Structure formats: structure tokens, C-alpha cells
Image (cartoon, rainbow, N blue to C red; front, top):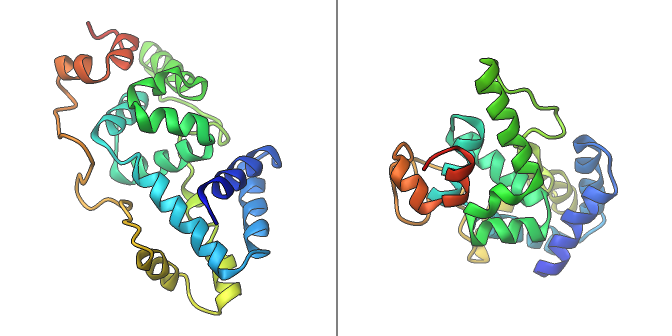
Length: 201
């Protein structure tokens, strides 16, 4: 499975389903019809593309959108970014500051602003919540059916291809230069679009 085939499955799963549960079922069904080699290939591309998102700058975007952050939550946020499709993903991976231009993320910032103004917690529907934890597991069942092995050996097969898994995070093991996310001047310098949206001069 090459990268184009990987993105084709990710994007078709979104077009062919109306809910996240349906999307997961669609992907599992498609992968169940593939060989073990293709399933490992899908998982390898999944880990590769997701790892590109594991940066300090995108973590800052995530924390800004929600008003708080956790390492697990950031992982599920990265899953969600991948689920949006290749073009939005590439835009964000290349320049996290442009994430604010995505309508899906802009909506999160709007909800967050309203939450601050009304002193209420942000409320998102299940379908627009900025996390997609279960997308990480869609290969498990198809792999076990195709090989008779448990899902743990899938990770070993991916590692054997030379793919480095950045998630789950152990400590703040982000890519790029570390910086103080609470420093407004650093936020304005590194993420000027996001800073302007947050009202940081």
C-alpha cells in the first residue's frame, strides 16, 4: 500500500459514512478485504503521517483551541487532523499556524470564545469534537483476522519497516524547538495567525 492508497481510504471513509461510528465500520470492512501486507502498510502510513503532527507548535494550537491540553488528548487531536483528509493534513503539518484557516478548527475557536464570554464549558457534538481516538484502532480486527496474530504483533511489523511511532507520547517528546506555551510573545512570534485570533498583540 502506497501513500496515495492510504489517503484514498481515509478520504473515502469520510465520504461513504454519515457518522464516526459508520466511518470506523467502513474502514474496518475495507481493510478486512485486504491482505495482511496491505493492512500493515496502512498502519505504517498511519503512524508516519501522524508522527509529522507531533510538534510543539501544533500542541500549542491544540491547547489554544481547547483552553487546556493533555498528551492523550493531543494524540486524539492528531488523529482528528488526519481524518480531515490529505489537503488539510498537509497544510497543518507543513505550517501549524495555518490550522486556524481550517473551517473545522475555526469553529472550535469560536466555541471556545463563546465559552469564555458566557463562563460555560465548550460544547461540541460528537461528530465535530476535535478528537478521534478510535481511528487509531481500525487495523486491529482486520489484522488479527488476516494473520491469526494479536494486535501487538502489528506494531512489531510496522516497526520492522523502519517506521518510528511518536504516539503515545512519553513526556513532552515533541518535534521542533521547545518553547513556553504560556509566553504571549513567543506565541505571537511562532503562531502569528493563531495569536491574532486569540487577541494576542
